Image (cartoon, rainbow, N blue to C red; front, side):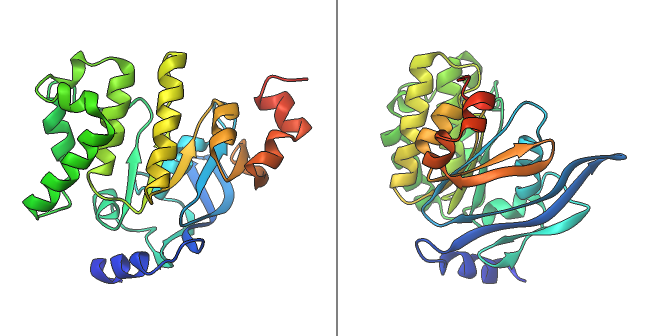
Length: 253
């Protein structure tokens, strides 16, 4: 399917309808099967949390959705259109962006340059400048530091930069991989407030997060991944009250 046709299909997905569908994906690293038939859905307007222990396969699922890894089998649909074989740089232009684990900002480039790299999918300069102003409104510190190199920012500010860079592509859905990792409690709270704001302004969010309590508190629905398989799923509030989840992921007896 052509890029414009997929973009039209994505744009046509209404609130509460399925925007992203992951169907029975199997992913291997050499002979080791890391993802063993994972399936789930994300509806437009939702925050979906994917939680699990280290090594459960959360980041591998995210990389497979965004095109950085190819599954051995299974399919990924965006707006009902198959994107499984589409390269990562083209998937961004279809309306799906990722905030990677560890932020991965370009340390030597300025804040402004990092943000504008996120707008590479747009050939309309005026549109990019308009989006830049919106990012600055959401992250005033980035505007204050726009001429600084990204490597001089604090961890929390780099996380905001990574989020702002992803938003520059005007995504319909944004994948966030461990956004609170390595941050102080103050910045963790701020990052989750921003995630809710991003969602409230119309962007669907798929969130991978080891801080299960924060993730479940922010999400509408959640999936628990264990050793490459979905072990539990349901409303985030129900999983928050689930005894198994409370013991394994919330540190409660």
